[in-house]
Length: 503
Image (tube, rainbow, N blue to C red; front, side, top):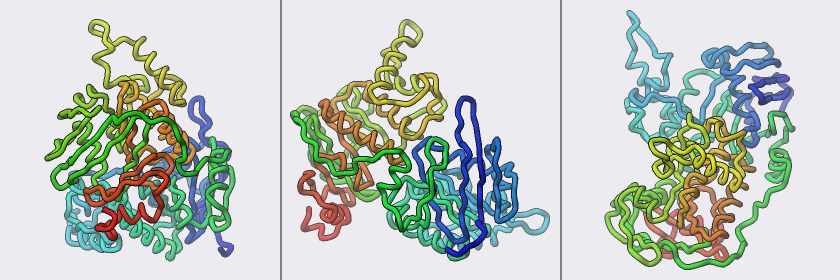
């Protein structure tokens, strides 16, 4: 990389909240045409640093430079006017508006008498969508799009201006593999135009695929910058969390009990067909497959959120009929959902109330909920799961992703299930917290729980599972033990290649 002026530079940024020093003298810069990863555990200060850059938080001290010019960011609109564009992990779209209206929101092209120039609006939007290689047009209502396609609309917003720097915050969290390729092509195009890219992600394979440098924050402090081509995952991880991680495949051995859950010939319309599997007490059964393979829909059926069109569900060899989550809970089945923020938590509610929400009726004393009983449950699972929070009054939305996930797991464990289903257990969680969640899953199996883990990450499913069910297009293609599975045969099974041979 030649000696140039950074397109973006933050110098000595300090930000303190009541009782917490979120950023402590942090400096960070991005060169023209560079993809610079910003990494750190949840709570390390990445989001706070980007909110300072985006004008959401005013720093206590420090400076921001765009090129050689110092700037004071006072709002997201000013950040965008200065050439800094954000692609947020949390979508900020208006569901009732069209794709075109969302992409150019606040910047609609006008003609005489202040009227919207709809022809230009749709033509400009369709040109952006062509670059993104998506399968919908500018007139589509955003609320009718999938989450992955909504993410592509969010990315389209960045292409409406000529940015100097674009910040991508976990941009692939909701994307399929094909959509990731398109995103990486967009990033490469921005690079070729001299745009600086800040790439925030917990996915190591992406970091090592597309970035030039990696800067690491830990506990609100800058810990160093590494050249991507000259480092490896172990060095980055140690810089992030200050210790080595066990990234090996699952080779643990403990006593397994009887079959706790079995499904026979389970089908749900076009979503999945003729699914058969079982899971024993003390076992972790992994489900792996591409987006749309039917894994989540199977879990939702077992938990009573979907009605099967055929097949049986058996618990302890006895057929059961589950028509609602209440039925599932009565039968000892709990589900940790795929999206903890929208499906598993009430973000504005405190930790205790989130954890005890499903059993409020059982904790009432007269007309009131028993505070003592709720606090006892929270304290039990805070200790058991090592949930890091100042106390039960902490608002869940203020916790790191890993601790939020532990609250959801604690909520369902407190129902004392026989079978625990965990869908995407570490989505959006940093590498250190991932390791803790993986260890927790293995510990739960060792305690006698029957655990089903659904994951889109191959290293994760290999690391935690005793057996792996590979799915493709709504069907079980093959089942592997941890001893016989390889990356090659697992990929073959979930991609439909030579399906007749692996079925």
